[in-house]
Image (cartoon, rainbow, N blue to C red; front, top):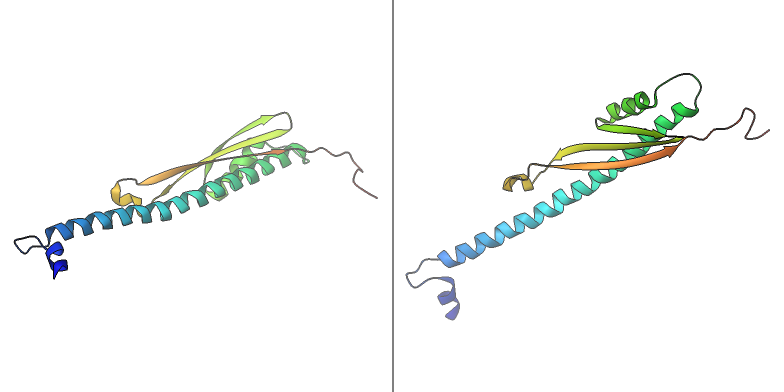
Length: 136
């Protein structure tokens, strides 16, 4: 039986086989971590961009809506509801919002990669319409 000779060392121990199994398991764990936590990072990045776009829309509505209000205040209120922080820049009728938040990793934390940070950006233009414009 030649197979038994490859599985065990000359003294009868299976140390070589255990080492190969350990290395393979560590490799599989890393691949699983990249798949699970990488997918979570992609989803968080998508969410960050969506939240930034919606916050920019909220800020642009302040520019075109009646009454007084701060664009930054409207954006920060929206971001607070979403549980993220961000910055606002207004240039003319364009509102730019950048958000940033962190999420803990699930599997990669086993090797010391505890969290990832995601940044998203969005913008909106304030459109001005005259009184009576838009139809009969």
